[in-house]
Length: 299
Image (cartoon, rainbow, N blue to C red; front, side, top):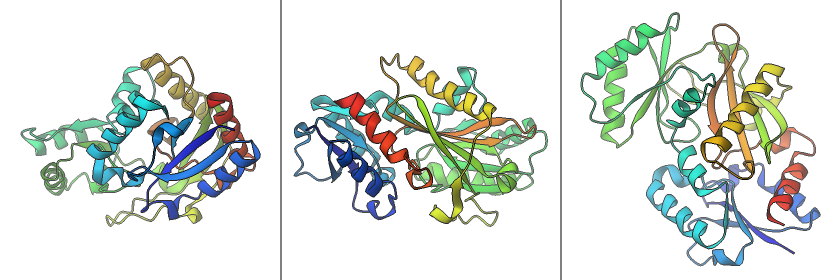
């Protein structure tokens, strides 16, 4: 029987609603799955057939340590998704690579630490947005909307001040328009296993106008059937990653988060291919599909 590691951490496991379902599904599929912490120094990673990232969400505060750990594990056993994909997916500037690959994304601009005239850069970005009343500033590395803020386009000075604050913390940032469709239609999160579409959910907006962020609780999610356009864009994004990294096999898992632009067309908000919540409780059989994908890939 193969033995796999499902990787989490002490801070995050309680919020990993996928884990109990996946462990049970793996057992039924004849896979021995151990739930382990990425920062547990007693673990012998070479004892596992494969190591699969699930909810190591403390990486945001310990990014260098996490990447060093991933490099060590990747050198001695199979890590999923592959190390180059994980490193790429941890930094939201990947959106620019997807745009360059011809995919539709939320308009995105990067402002790195050390840039001069940040207020002017913010103004220039706002001028390119035809109808947006607000912009969003988010750290390039982050999870669950940590550090993400909304600003009205007229409040450029406050937006610039917040960017300076993020830079002082060592964070480069992204600028995006706030697309109001998320308030009415939410976002559509599509999940793929071994490159094959599995299921999707609707997630309500978490980022509030007053700067607060809702906790990503289950009550803000429900099952959703994506449109053909959404399926096409999400599938193209998964294929694009395979092409960028010249992968011989599809991504073991991926979640593509879409919202609608001002023309009601889907655009990519984020692509979660490192350690995403996969919303298994919202789709009957999804845990079993993931377990089967693991078995096919690692068996």
